[in-house]
Image (cartoon, rainbow, N blue to C red; front, side, top):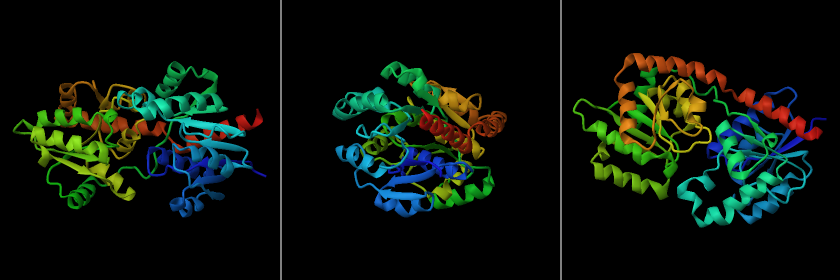
Length: 367
């Protein structure tokens, strides 16, 4: 009989959800994979039922006291519980594996001084990293933060990088442009950002850099920001208005998953100006679609992008504008980044992520 792993699958509409869905799909493709029990919300039951051997509904929202009781109850009888975030149940007495994507809630200036960080995130990070039998880190950068900030013993951490789905691949660029331009009313070629709008994504610096470039008479591009956040969007829209570039910046709250490769493929550049990233999946997704990448020289991004991106200092709008102009102004550099990006993504596979996770499951259950 195969052993059973319970996986907390409640956060499906996020980057963590991308990790969970692709990990589960790839685990099920492994011939010696475990029996998987998904712990999920009511709205995602049918979606998970198509992927897993068993589904149990958990009504508790994330970051609540209720989940500390409901997750252990739903995982009862499983051989191992895998939680993809630091909100793991401290009251679970079985084998517990936790994936930590980043420490933004306790390291980023926007969050670390908030009541939520001091009352919940800080104690939970400390307690969960002690309670977990083992921790998966998605990057060496996040591992280094776990070692330095939380004093987690190195042998307790395994770095297993995320992959990039085969959904993201080279497609006909002209066809992609025709589809995306028509759908969103675009009339100019565009620079793309994909992610949430929180301050650590550094979008104000991107907007200021783009404003500098718009001041040039021969600069005829648009900035497309894919992401939505009612709390932070207002400030970004106001920044665009203050700089007089409202007509050059398009905020797109979301696009259907099937359209994402076209959105990447039709862009001239993907830029990722973040101050902090635990991994930076849009970098790989853009590269897989043949789109050149310009990203900040910080956190995990150089680890993920390697020599396949043009870099800049995230504190400098001037440096970001210069990096964008270097790429937009050189067909040769665009082709070099495109070629290197397509090679780079071959190093990041969900199948390999699942294989190494499977090895870790087996190791933990033998201890």
